[in-house]
Amino acid sequence: MVGGTADEQKVAELINEFRAENGLHLWTWDDGIADCERSHAYDCEQQGYFGHGAKASPKDYNICNERGRFLGIGPVLESAAQGVCSSPSGIVNCWKNSPPHRAQLLADGNTRHGAGISVNEKYAFHASQ
Image 1 (cartoon, rainbow, N blue to C red):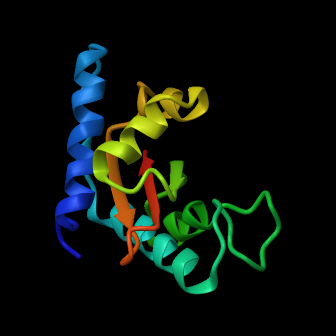
Image 2 (cartoon, rainbow, N blue to C red):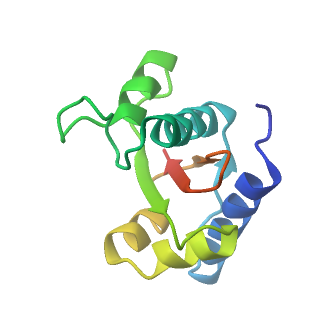
């Protein structure tokens, strides 16, 4: 999906606002990364699980990294949100208040990012590279 949904774009916008507030460069939207994240959110919704991997995969398996390699995007830093973090601002606030996710949102070496939100807005994923 070119450009992502309105909610996905809002997540990206709020992340860039947070980065700007911290004196960091803004990330550019990447449809390939967003497609990986959206696909993963859809998988979680359909299969009833939540995590960086796949339901039937080992815990150290990151499905978005694998999809990224397959698509030629490469590995990504991924953040995930579920449940109470359901609006774009709620999602980003959850990540900002979690030290490991906050560190990923403020990563300085990355330049591109994308977000994916499941149809029922139960699962949200963001990745940067």
